[in-house]
Amino acid sequence: MTDPTGHEADDELFTDEEYEEYFGGEYEPLAPKSRRLPLGVKLLGYFVALAMGVGGLLTLGDALATTPDVREPLDIEQAAWDRVSESEYGWLVEDIVIRPILDPAIGAFVTNNPPDGIIHIDDRPWQLERLDELMDHEIGHLLDFALWEPFDDARKGGLGTEAWAECAAVVAGTRRVDPRDPGGEYHCFDDELDSYLATLAPITEVCARWGTLECREVEPPDVNR
Image 1: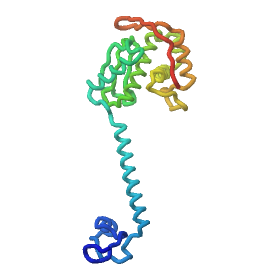
Image 2: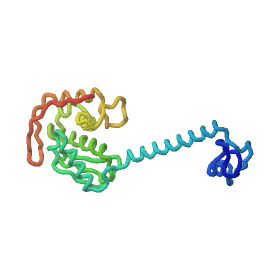
Image 3: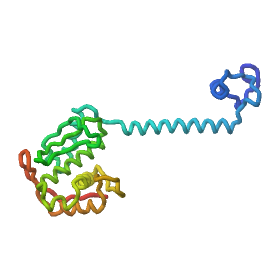
Image 4: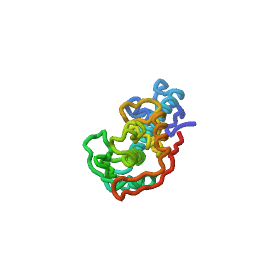
């Protein structure tokens, strides 16, 4: 079989684009054998190029996976209320305020001085999954405020404030138990989750101490680890 120039066609010859890429010049139809790339080497090059392409796609996928879902304050607020409506203790939330929070380590907060049931959320862009976890954490704080006075000795079954709220998010299904210490006070270990569940087990009624002062019957919490 011959090519249009009348020379014998050789599947191992470079294409125009390959020759220019490898040798920096235009393709020569009569290139000597020394400039021809063995089939095995060409295949290896193709696999490397493919791997680089796949790597690029994976990097793009990672970037897309971390792209915020909500950016505007109204969208953040609506997404937060959506999570409140799904929460067993969402009725403890009196209001949601989207506002700048200067400390970048704080995504949201509630106050217990006095408790008012208002969740303040930073106006940064949020992924919905992270925002849901954040809301369950803050609702966990509100549950704490509803059950005990700030200096009650029996408060939270002896758990730290943030550990209590993190375990609340575990029970709500938006967080997992920590298999090892992540550092800091934001954690929920197996024994802390046991304390959380044991503390809430005998409680049959929760009353908000703000807003309409509503009380509701509750069931003992359960969680699949």
